[in-house]
Image (cartoon, rainbow, N blue to C red; front, side, top):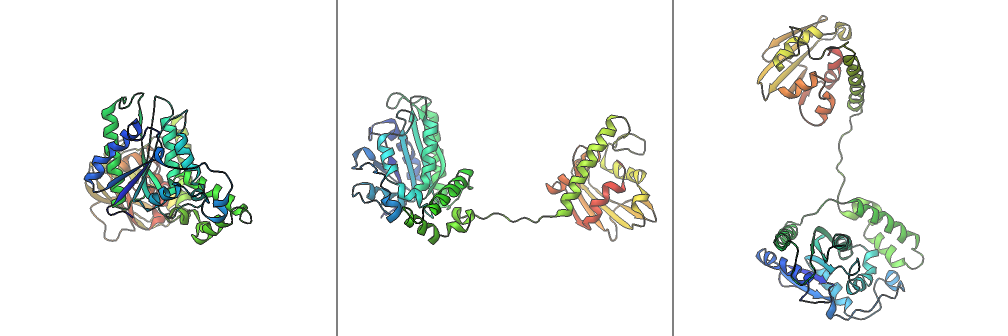
Length: 386
C-alpha cells in the first residue's frame, strides 16, 4: 500500500490541519523524514464515520456491517509501519470524532493483532486531562497491532500558544527518533501489567461467550494460539534461571544468624572483624591473616580444605587458608590445588566481614565470584567466628 516506510497518524481534532494537535503531529515530520519515513495524516473531521450501534455483529462475524470510511482508515493503520493516535482533550477525554472511530474498531479490540509495531500517542489540553487522554490512546494502540514507545503531551489555549514550546518540540523530535529506531531495529518494549490484565480479562470474556456473540472472537484466539499462554500472546518468553535450593536456604540461614549476631553486638558480646591486634582489620590482607584466630576447630572436625582468595580492586594479591588436622593457617601466593577459589574486590570482602553486606546476597548479585566446591562456601561463616 505504501512505497516508502510509512507512519500513519489519525488526528481526532475537528480543527483539521490548523489546531494544536495538528501542529504537534507536524513537529514529528522533519525528524521522521530524516530517518527515511513518510508521515501520512488522516484527519477524522473530513471522514464519514457513523456511530457504533453496539449490535455485536463484528464480534460474531469478524467485521462491521456499516460501509463507510472507517474501513479504509483501518486498512491503512494495519498496513502502516508505525501508528500514531492523536486527539485534543474535549471535556476530559478524546473528541467525539476520535471516540466514534475507536468505538467502531471494537472488533479489533476483541481480536488483538499478532503484530507489535511501534506507535505514539499525542494529546493537548488547556491544562487538564492531556496525560490521561494520551495514556488512554497509548493503550488503544494495541487495537491496531501497535505498542507505545511514548506519549507527546502539551498545554495550550490558542493555536501554537504552547506552554514551553521549545520543550514540546524537543520532546517531539526525541519521540520521532525513538519511533524510527524502533521500526528500523524491530524493537520490542517489555510487556506490562496492562498487557497482562487485558489478556486475562479479554481471554476470559471471549471464552465465556464463545457459543453466543463471540464465536468469531473465540475462533481467532484459538487460531493464533493466544490461549496457550501469556508469553504466546505478547510474543516474549520468560527467562529461565537455575534455582539452587541449598544456596537459598543457606542465604536465609545466614540472614537469621546475622540478625542474632547484631543483637549480640549491640549488647557488647561480639566484636566484628578482629585482627591480630584486636582491632577491626584495616585491609583485606590483614583480615585474611587474622582469620585463623577466629577458626572453629569443633565445626571443622576432620575437614581438609584449601580456600584461595584472589583479591583485586583497592588491593591486589593472592593468598590462601589451609585447614587440616583441626588447624587453620594463612599462606601468601597461590595454592597448588585449592578446593575453593574466591575472586573478590577487597572492599566487598571487608564489608562482608564487618557484617555490612550479606555474603550470600553479594554472591547472588555477582559482586564476587567463586570456583570449586560450593559446599565449602556455604560452610565458611560457620568455620570462622565473626
